[in-house]
Image 1 (cartoon, one colour):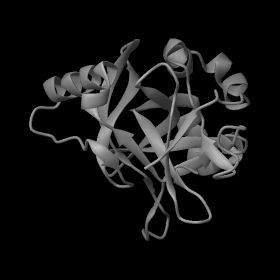
Image 2 (cartoon, one colour):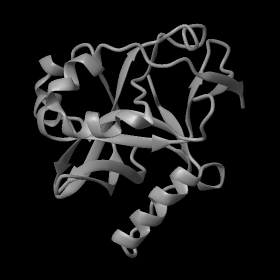
Image 3 (cartoon, one colour):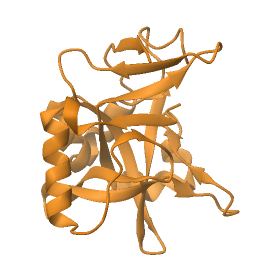
Length: 188
């Protein structure tokens, strides 16, 4: 599960560039930076006019009873869930970050990030709810770099495959079944 992540422009030129594009596109709308929590408004990447484009979106699909939000979707069952099916077919997104957080059984907080880069991209889905763009992060079974801390982790998309995730529906099923890359774990 991914319940918090980091979006820090000071740590990554790629993330800074995304934020600059968002600020230019959405004058006056503020994007959360630093530690991101559910219901924060943050940058995501979407397909827009056949190009990868930044957008501002709120993290979490509202629950049907209006009590809270759904922040993650299981990649293994996402095709089966009515809540996510249309988004999977038509509104895939990328959630850019500098890493994500998870807590172990002893309540120690860890940051997970990708080696060799200061940007980590997570697969997501988005929808519109009362004229607001909302997104969820896709999760999958944890790989060996994560299993000691938690049984689930975000579906990490390598930078070179961002366009494939956004534009190529035929690759969706294969990407959903992938084991994410090994990550670096740091106590924070």
